Length: 250
Length: 250
Image (cartoon, chains in turn brown, cyan):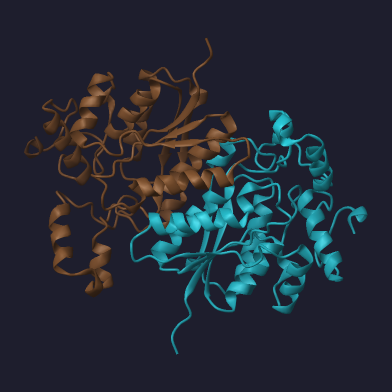
C-alpha cells in the first residue's frame, strides 16, 4: 500500500477550518498551519489549533505556527487594531439594501468602503496561502486546504472561488516546474449549517474549536463570527458544544 | 498642483531595488518596505535600506520593516538555512547545457530540481508582494514597485513577467472593489549593465546598496549576487563604489 499524499491545511482553530481538516484527513496525511497575525484572540486560537492537532495525532514537525508580526504594523483592521471596534450582530442584508438604494455609479468612496466589514484584514488570505504554499513546496505536500466560505464571507473579497482559482494559477507560475500544488476549498459553497452537519458526520472535534473574534475565555456570542457559528448550529438543529458568555446568544 | 500618488517600493537594499526606488521617486511619493526573512545578510540589508530611505528623505511612518520569521521555520533555501551552502560563481549556462543533454521527458526529479539555484526561497515574492499590497491598501498607495529582473533570475520562477501579471489579477480579485493597485516591475527586462547605467543617470545612491548573500562587512565578491552585480558594473564600464573582500572579484 502506498502512503497517502501530504496536505497542508490552514487551521485557524475555528469551525470551518476544523471541518476542512476532517475532510482532508480522509484522503491525506496532515500538515497543519496556524497563522498568528496579532488578531485579538490569537492565543485562544492557538490553543484550539494544538488541541485539534492532538486529536488528529499530527506529529510536532508537521505543525507550523507562523507569526505574521507585520500585520499589527500595517493595521487597518478591527481584528489587529485595538483602536477599532469589533461590530456586534452586523447585518449584511441591511448593508446590501443600503447599497441597492445607492446605485453603484453614484456611490461615494465612503459608502463603498462600508460594504466591507471592519474585521476585513487587507489581502489576508494571500499571506496565509503563500506561507502554506512555501511550506508545501519544502515538505513535498501536493495540496493546500483552506476553509474559506463564500456565502458567510461575502464582504471579504479574498474568499471568493475566483480568487482561489487565480491563486492556483499563481502557484503554477511561481514554483519549481515539478511542483504541483493544488488549492482545495472543500467548504467554500456550503452554508454554515451544512458545515456543522458535515463535521458531525466526520467526527470532527467541534468541541475543541474557537470562533470568537472578541474574547478568549467564554465566547462572546455577539460578534460576527460567534453569530455565524451559532446560526450554523441552529440550522443543523444541534447544540453548540462550547461555552458562551451571553445567554442572549443561544 | 495635486500631490503625487503614493507607491510602495520593495527595497531590499540591493542595486536593482535601489534603481527601482530611483525610478519610482520620479513619479510617486515613496513608501519603502524591507522584508527580513532570516536571510544571512538581513541586518546589513536593513542598514542599506535605512541609508537609502534617508537619501530619499522618506519619513519614518512610510518605512516598513517587516520580519517574516516563519521562513526560517520553513527552511528549504540556502539563504535562510545555515546548513546549506551559498554557491560560488554558479554557472547558469552550464546548467542549461546539462538540461539540454537530458531532454525534459527523461529528466529525473533530481536533475529538474538542480535547475533552480539553492538560494531560491520557495514562493518568496508572493510573500513580499502580499505584504506590499496589504500595506498599499491601508495607506492608499496606487502602485507596488518591485525590482525583479528576469534575465539574471532565470532560475527563480517567481521573477517572470507572467508571474507578476497573474499577481496583478489576484490583487484585483482580492482587494476592496475601489482599490486599484498596480504591480510595477520597471527593471524586469533590463540587463545588469543597463540597471547600473539607469541608476547613475537618475543619481541613485548605488554607494549605499548591498547585494552580497554571504557577508556583512566587505562584500565577498564571489557569491551569485556579488558576481551578477560586478558583471553589471563591468558592462556599464564604471567602477562599483562598494568595498570587496576578495581582490579576485574585481
